Amino acid sequence: MDRLEGMRVFVAVVKADGFSAAARQLGMPLATVSRRVIELEADLGVRLLQRTTRRLSLTDQGRDFFVACARILDDIKDATEAVSGEYRAPKGEVTITAPFGFGRMHLQPVVLEFLALYPEIRLRLMLVDRLVNLVEEHVDAAIRIAELQDSRLIARKLGAVRIVLTASPDYIARRGVPGHPRDLADHDCIAWAALGQLPRWEFQEEGRVQAHQITARLWTTVAESAVAAAEAGLGLVQSTCYQAEPGLREGRLVLLLPAFECPETPVHLVYPSNRLLPLKLRVFFDFVIPRLEARLAAVAQSVRGCGSP
Image (cartoon, rainbow, N blue to C red; front, side, top):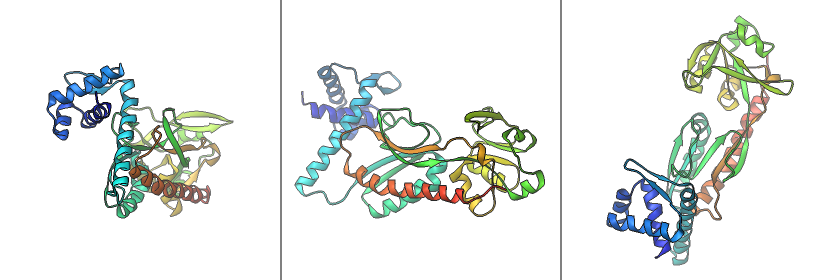
């Protein structure tokens, strides 16, 4: 069989999330598309796809093979355009995901600058507060604010964020400054998490991270909502430093209990492990990475300059 053609059909099936949609996109009969994938699996000696009446999913071997195939096909396309003289500028679609707050505040402004410079690139921006499977959801790269677990991903560290406790000057004037995490029991707190989760805030004490249960005066599912409530004087809020930084910088918030903060959380840009990157991703990474590094460094410096009461 023509393995390269089989790879092309396989990638189209995965991206289209089905044989029928892939057949329409490729302009092939459905039976031909199905036969190409079956022949590819037989040639490789592995099952690439799990087929059910309701959905299509990749096997573990299929996930790895899909990533490799997609990159190989992109490399072939780039090389063909370069050699033939057709290539003039990076083009195609790039998909990146990030946590909602960070994406809205820091990634989106950089993305808009990038798109202004590269008119032939289209970009899908997935701002979601969940762990996205890059292969299964056909995502090129992700911003992860966490300790990394998946060793199959290539990671570029962009910086780190602090988890900070803040409140408004008005609230502190009325209720006083907590001197220790145990003092939270005497304060109004603003929680942000999925409703139903036990509201607990973590602090570092004597080298150990300990969780403290809080009583939430207000409970919201969005961090920006919680920070806005704290700025309005409702109570204490724990958030990332980039969420609190505008309020700290402009005096709407003050920093509390900095000596008890947990270790910083790293921020990485991650993408599936491959030998080569398509040109559209190379230019995207070259543009985005230094700008996000600079933004995180500026946030860190700004928050460091905000003393506690």
